[in-house]
Length: 153
Figure 1 (cartoon, helix red, strand yellow):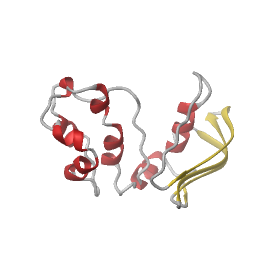
Figure 2 (figure 1 turned 30 degrees about the vertical axis):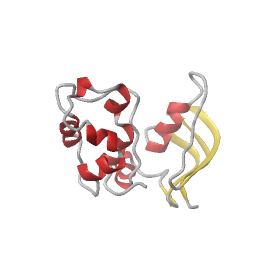
Figure 3 (figure 1 turned 135 degrees about the vertical axis):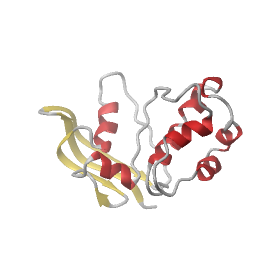
């Protein structure tokens, strides 16, 4: 299966401060990957590096075979790379459907496609943001995919 994401020899951090040293990983198309570790070992920095929020000192980041390590954040987002933090960043006074509407971006992801991918979310489309579970409120994969301008899977 083709690689959706490949990180090779990445050395990155914040300005001159290096946090990640010689990181290697790959993620197959439609695959899963867990990044585990105690506080302060660079998990968030790794995700921030993939998104383009850190200084890439060395190495390569490829997304679907395309080098993206040199691209600005907005270009990576347009390619379909998304990151949604754990925080429950929704509008509690809006419905699920309204929350998706206010975060919509131009592209292939319609509400129907998001609901097809996340049927439990579709069942809760009329529920208020403050009346759904933490997992449903984060809707993390749907929020990341929804804001992408091309299909990510």
